[in-house]
Length: 271
Image (cartoon, rainbow, N blue to C red; front, side, top):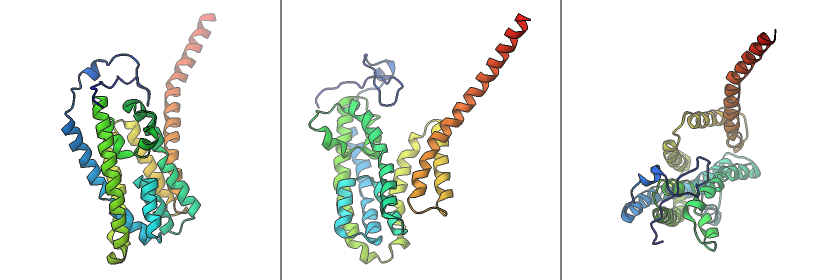
């Protein structure tokens, strides 16, 4: 991890990196001190890791045992999916539907991995272990780093801090659930989603991304009262293809008019 390799310039394709030397955009990004990277990574890791307490309380309140709660944090380790699972179970949802909703929420991490695998360029033997730490927070810290060394430090410190704290606070939360009484009254189940939204909001830079996110929220909230727990989360994913379809129609509209005008001109010339 001693090299100061500048991250190559993006080709514009998600998850793809140019094979050529860094362009002007990459050269304009100065090296970031290791201490600054560690500070940013610790800030995210500690802030989000402490919300594992909310998951422990919520999970215990939904009927899961201490062992089940802790195993979920150890092996699943993606807060949004964990909250979706226990929330659906607490609402009386079918376990298979709850698990499916949690699974599809976690699928996004696979797409993060496609990008991070190229940025980090970790040894093959390390990749299976690093994959367990590919989540929203580690991705948010890693992607903005100007060098591969900084990216590796950000990923490692964020992942390690968050993993240790999340599991410790999950244990404390599950043990302390009885002392808190009615866990629903505390609203702790909203802590992790709130943190997730706080991290996601700055990444929605384009109008298309904001429209897609807004439509997904609208779909989920509209379907929540009429469908079993967990299903609205699954169907909110339809926001992306809907937006893409509408964009395609909007682009085809002007093209179709131009084609029609061209055909009329050609017809007039022949006559």
